[in-house]
Image (cartoon, rainbow, N blue to C red):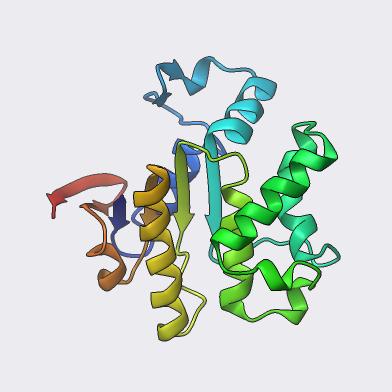
Length: 193
C-alpha cells in the first residue's frame, strides 16, 4: 500500500490517471505487468483497465438510477459474465464491505460511507491486482473516513492487492507502507514506513 502526497497542483491525481491509463503521458512510459501502456490501442487499454485496475474516487461515481447491487454488477456485465456468476460475486463483495443488507438501495438512500463501500466493492469486482484510490476518505467525516481506511487496509492484506492512495490527509498516508511525496510533477521524497 503506497500513499501519494503533496500540495494541490503537484500532480498526484495526474500520476494516478497516468498509472490507470485514463491519460496518456506526453513523455516517458508506464509499464503494467511487463506491458507498456503506450503500446496498447484504445481497446487494449480499456481491457487492461477493466481486468487489472480498480478505481475508487472521492465522489463515488455511482450511477444514481442503479441500486447498490446493480452498480457493483455493472463491470461484470461489461465483461460478459453469466447472470448467476454475477449474482454470486456481487453478494460476496457486498458482504465483504458490510453491505449485504443494502443491495436494493439507490445511492441517494445511502450514507457517504455506504456509497464509498459500494464504490470499493465495484472497484474490486474482478479482484484487480491494482487498486487506485483518489482521496477515498476526502468526502467523508473523520469517523467514516477512518472506517473506510480500515476497510482498504484490510482488503490490501486479505486480497494482496496493490493499493495506491492519493491523499492530503497525513494520517491516511501514514497507514501505508510507503509514502511518495510529489512537488511540481516530480517525486521529491520516497519514505518507507
